[in-house]
Image (cartoon, rainbow, N blue to C red; front, side):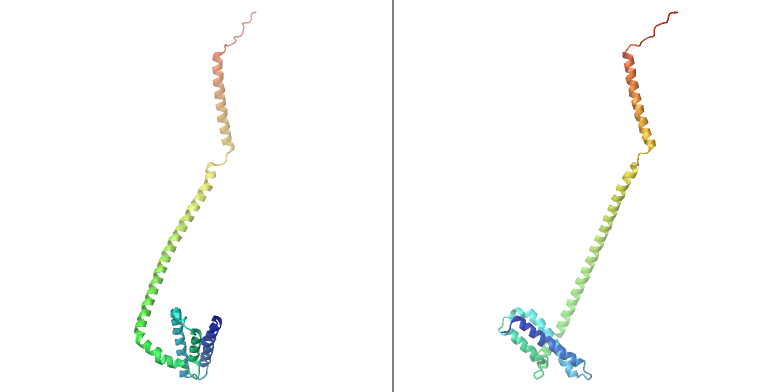
Length: 203
């Protein structure tokens, strides 16, 4: 059995690279045959559905013995000039199956598109509402912070620096308070102590 790395290399080269190059040469010919274009279009259609089927059912079929080798052999069978199995597989298996289920597949695709569009529209609406709410919260936060900043700057200005007149008023008030206290103390001490009268002078 081939290794996993060699299997991937063979699938890429024999399933994609070489058929893509042959398809490119067919398209770029001056006189392109409709049958050749039809053949390669059928090949890529089959490849797309085989990839989808493989991704979905890989768990159930990958355990088969010689699965990788059978896969590579099938890819070569589809485009090999002597076999050209693409036409046979497409006309015998793929086209009858799609003809029977084409209407149902179209309906399912339309339903899936509608659901996806509804999901996208609801998600965009929810995102817009959430973004609008966050935007207003940010504006409110900025306004509150700017108001706090203004109030912090206005407090020292309201008190104002001490001017000479204010200092003089304060010192005058302190002097008046001091004189009032001294006068009160003097008056109280005068009542308690006897006054010294001057002696009369005899001539």
